[in-house]
Image (cartoon, rainbow, N blue to C red; front, side, top):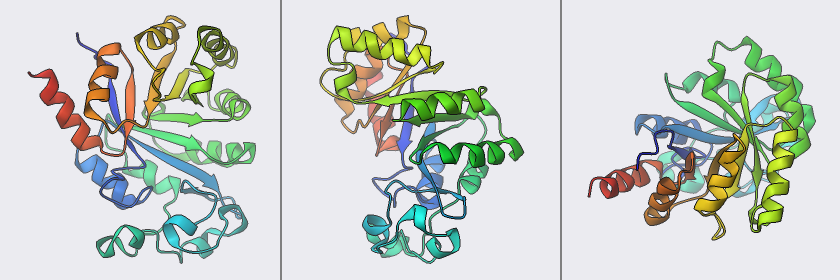
Amino acid sequence: MQNEDFIIIAHRGESFDAPENTLASINLAWERNADAVEIDVQLTKDEKIVVIHDKTVLRTGRKHMRIAAKNYNELLKVDIGKYKGEKWKDERIPLLNDVIDSIPKNKLLFIEIKSDDKIIAPLKKLIDKKNVNPVQLKFIGFNLSTMKLLKQTLPRIESYWIVEKKYYKNKNKLEETIAECMSSGLDGLDVGASKYLNKNVIRTIKKGNLKIYTWTVDDPKRAVQLYLDGINGITTNRASWIKKKLQNSMNK
């Protein structure tokens, strides 16, 4: 069975080996020929769109600073690489602008929206001025209303609703989730990779003319099964390693 649309998405870059959501991690993913990179974005106090997962820099930067309460020049003082080891020290919180500039031809960037609706206007302004193929960008997010508004604002860019297992673990809930996704005008779902994610769930979602991605898959056997089940892509902390394992398994 060939799953030609299948892609492997580097979760926050090559985050197993490099500090997550940094240019070092993102560029390492590109160097290792990742199909796509997933990042998280938030809005600073001065309305800069920055790439970071948590609401504060405590976990990765060891500082008690809230992203939404600080200007970008203040956040730039924080070293978010050193927590991963001395070789990564002096990595800084990147701007989405710089990450978009890093995307190689024919590669994809999945942008997870971590802020509320206030990020949409600055996001549109940024993307409108960038010379980037909209096909290379994908928006993902947990907040359905934000994702709906984002799709309406930037309709040429695919947008996906991130859902956990409770949204698809039984038939009725799955059908309800699919209906909500479709009525919101979104392009598909990005689902948590629980034990409930199987061929039937994947086929049911795709029957609605929706795409389905999943997170986070670091087990090669699980990756192979999801590939065979027809999923559009998996998000993993070890993109290069998983890709090799998958290729080896397919060649047996």
